[in-house]
Amino acid sequence: MTKDLSPGEARTRQRNRREIITYAFAGVIGMVLGAVTVLADKGSGDLFFGQWETMVFDPTIAVILAVTIVLGFIALPFWSFTVIDELVRERNLIGYTGGGMIVMGGAPAWAVLHSGGLVPAPSVAGVWALGFFSTMIVFAIAWIRSR
Image (cartoon, rainbow, N blue to C red; front, side, top):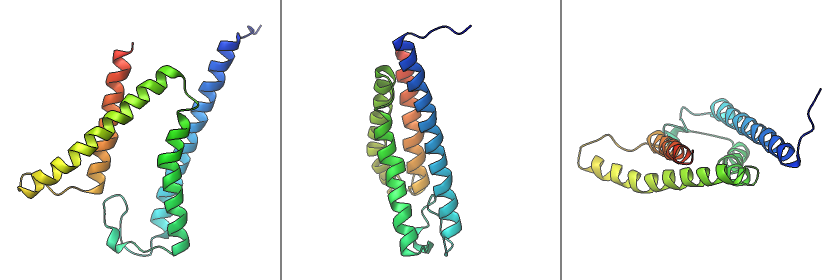
């Protein structure tokens, strides 16, 4: 026997299902971007590790990749805020804001420390990791505090 769901429970299930679909879609976009970037590169560069000067793409592929990157890394996260509940949205906004602030201050600090000979030069992968992991840490702190 199945229990009839209240309108709130039905809405929560629908929201959870849409959230899983959004994450799966984002994962597929990331895998396709990675595969196309590796397979379409006619040079010996690497997008992730900042070897841009040796990357060579057909102009059409370059435009398609750029548009897909913008959609996948900017538009999809903004859209995802419309499909999550208020508490999760607040945690995500705190995580994104904290991660962004850490990158905005951390990357220039890293560059200054490099110019003083104290650390290796900043890299695309390093700045990405700084943003990604700091966002996750700030999100985890917000999640723990809201419990």
